[in-house]
Figure (cartoon, rainbow, N blue to C red):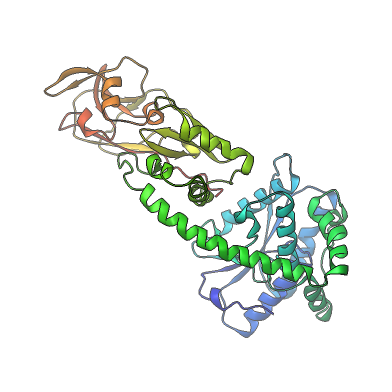
Length: 426
């Protein structure tokens, strides 16, 4: 029914096991495959969302199924954040749990099938999704340190049901699946039966259309990669871990190619904005040269500075401040929420790290005392970096500014490893 050969060299196999029909059949198929061939170790994961009383009995059912098949099971309890879409919030919590389990190169198998693919396409069409949304679910995509794989996308729900009955499998019927207040349940229960009366191959044809759209998206991704390769040149090495693009290179593209390149770039970093929110890009792009526009997205924001657009997320969204004594400057000093620093040179006296308050003055060899703000302007330091730029002091005297060799003594250089720019939700 499925081909698992491409993933036989993975360090480990995991399966997202809800206990429902789809994942029960997939677990049975994987266990059968493991008995007949040499496969990576198989491990089941059940995520308990705690959203309905009936779900409290499901971990025990899943454990009984796994015990019969000789497969270890991990049950993970998650907290679902309330929001406009309970389905999306539950999905986010579920996939965050999966990411926490996957090791480098591991595979997580999930049970989405051909009917799910068709429902996804129709659902996104009705929401007015673009090509990236309409290409629906890929067979494989990165997830955390590993890969998410959907081996049942060519298999119908009817085929899964037939397989389960033939092998005497027992599965959970989620009562919430009958609630047509949820859009997907409404499509499944009310819309697709009507479509299939007129077009019996509706699900198959819609799933095939999603594949065609996925191919088209692949071509657009290749174009985006070429555009981004040029726009990514010239990034400042002084701030490692900060991703940026050259604004002039992007502006030289047509508006459609700008959106295509940015969609590809942002898809690795955040949940993509819908068409209504792309006005944020236009506002950032077209703002006056001395403005400080920002485009806020789900998992971070884009800022513009010195002719580039920069992606900020994680710790970069949090303020920093305070003073930190450096009692052992021969090692690396961790800065709360701001990476770490190390010192080249051994100045005498009591050292500490602080941040800009305004009015700082630095003595530059051969130039005398200079206002730090003017010096940062000369070196085109991005405005959002300045407030978290570590400053090295000996008593009241400013000795060096991190990652800027021009702003320090030859025998006193401060090296800063900024915080990671990863949110982990892409």
